Amino acid sequence: MWKYIKPYLLFGILAGLFMVGEVSMDLIQPGIMSQIVDDGVLGLHNNGVGDLTLIWKLGIGMIGLVLLGGLSGAFNNAFVHLTGQNIGNDMRKDCFRNVMGFSFPQIDEYGTGTLVTRVTNDITQVQNFVSQFVRGMIRTIMLTFGSMYCIFKLNRDFGLITVCAFPFIAGCLVFCLHKANPLFSRLQAQLDAINEIMQEDISGIRTIKACVRETYEKLRFGRANDGLIQTQLKVLVIFAFMNPVVNAMMYLVVAAILLIGSFEAGSGRATPGNIMAAVTYTTQLLNGVLMLTMLFQNISRGYASWKRVKEILDSKPELKDGSFCGETEKKGEIEFRDVSFSYPHSGKMVLEHVNFTVHQGEKVAVLGATGCGKSSLVNLIPRFYDVVEGTVLVDGVDVREYKQKDLREKVAVVLQKSELFSTSIGGNIAWGKPDAAPKEVKAAAIIAQADDFIRQKNEGKGQSGPEGGYETIVAERGMSLSGGQKQRLSIARAVLKPAEILILDDSTSALDLKTESDFYKALEEFGAKSTKIIIAQRIASVRGADRILVMENGRILEEGSHEELLKSCKVYQEIYRSQIGKEDEKIA
Image 1: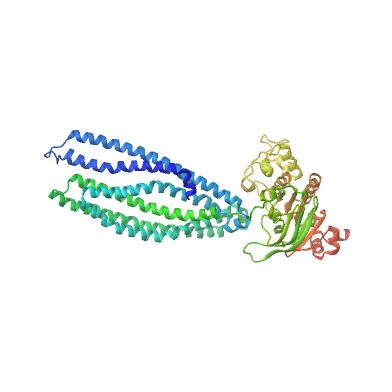
Image 2: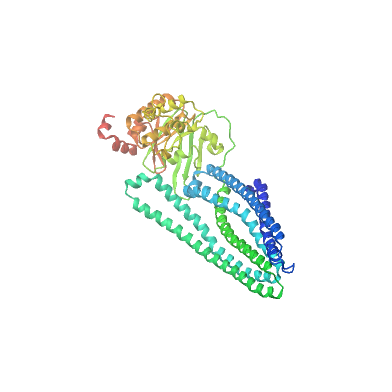
């Protein structure tokens, strides 16, 4: 925390100094009021004759103190919020930077919902805690001890009465905080769960409606929300119990001061002004104690949030950069040497003893049943995950020796799930090459068979024509586009990126056979030098590859051309029969 406070320590000190000024003005006023009552109104020190001049002087002085205190409070608020906002801003940036550096296993471990909650809600809680601590702690301490000192200075008996109430108030505070602390941690975890459900349901709303699962999702969200409400109610009950107890104790103190003060006033040991000032100081003391209860409540919640934020800030990327940053003689060569891989905490090998080499410019397809490890295989090339055993080499260098940025600049990937961003269509295509010229963006779209539908996007809105549609804003997560359109934009983005290796992970599944065929023809003409790895479910998508790797249960069963595998690989023959049909088999 000190790392974030230190740059804004001056703001915090200035806020504290202005708070000292504000509280000092508050503490001076009851003493002046006592003097106005005793000397100005009752004339206790002037044979019972009041002094109007004194009342005017002291009254004007009190107005000045109020204005000065208000000005100090305004400056205090300004510096407090500057401190809190800047600390929260720096913390949020660091958290986001850390999350961007997380490996896929780390993101999977945390989950999207909890990461969003920690970077937004938890940091806001910490920010509020810092702001309230800087303002509230100084004010509370000064009001509490300053009022206590002034009460003792006025009358020792009044001070002793006030001191007697403190053990009961302190005991109440400790009890309530002991009960509330675990609940604040539970609150944040329950908020994580609600955020996860919300994100799942909003992103999957079409599936929910198609499967008529609205009622189930409402019940699931309701259960999570009810749990959050129950925890919040428990916290409210605890502090609802504490506030009346503190109030009751302090009002008992006020009553005791008035009672004893009436006896002492009769004997001349106290004056009406002293009693009035003592009651005012006691009220200020009450406000300080109540503020302290709220402050401790915010400290508890802020500390629970800080622990969660700190966990993100302290997390180091599991994938460490290597030191290799030189040029390689080979360009686009991939080699797997006895590679085995399993996902963290799964306990099951997804890939086992995989060996193969892909040479520069070669087009290699990977075919196999769902769940055989095809996507896991290509995820190791840009080092989204690390191997458990063996080595993956790109251009003759172990991928673990590269800096991740340098390695991933060599590789363009089109993932199974098309991810688009809330920017223009042209901006999405140029995501991997932000400085691309419009004609380069258009050329990539033509190769991906996307140019026709892009130009039609804003037809009739003044943007149709050769460049029409490229400035169309894509809705969140590409909701305004069809599955095939999203795939084609993702392909265009990868084609535009100047990479030696192009990986297509089942990225043409939503395209019709003609569009897919036209895309592969255009790709051959454009990217003859780049190495291509194509993962597909359809034989029609891979039969033109130089080699086809047939996978089964995380192993490479056989490899060869389409014609070779039709003769030698039983699994490939079965897939072919199921997709092409016996008549086509005879023709082949």
